[in-house]
Length: 245
Image: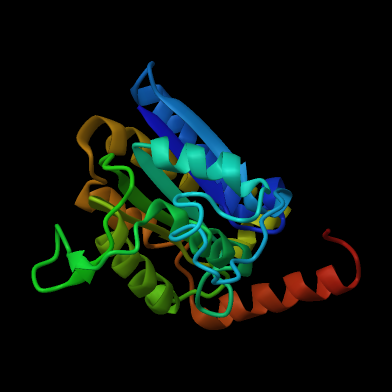
């Protein structure tokens, strides 16, 4: 089994997104010896914006006009059994680099319009590669409310329905700025153990159990909002004073 984990955070290995992806990857590896995983840091890659020329559909079917890092990434993407999208919440949706990545997956589709194979009454494009794929969304955010993810989740559920065979679901972590604070390390470690367990469950059972999903969706901790606001204010003041990178 092959799994690719796409990190769409600009802070890459210093990000809460990477911490969650790493814990998930560890759990997956613990569940199966024959699993092949790869975390791809998109901000480290040269990925040109799609220019909408449709050459990948007409002049050079399946091949983009840009010969950048997306060529190699797209090969891994099309071979993966599970694709994990890791994104810190940016203005209630995905980061720009993740949207650019998704735009550049256009070559894997053919231009023809067909009845969608999985969605009754919907229209789609045939894939050049008929490999069965599953998809998972992993996203932390700084807000304390789970509802902050609504637009991101809606987008990725729709994307999964249209482009993948099965949507595993989401791992969403609220109040995730605490990952960056020394006093939040212990709390973060407890949460990451749950993410690790989710990785094992996905490989062993194909799903995240309902009980574990509820635990994951509680975020790093459950405190009064005013207390959380005070902690957040203290954190950002220290950032302004250079105490945190």
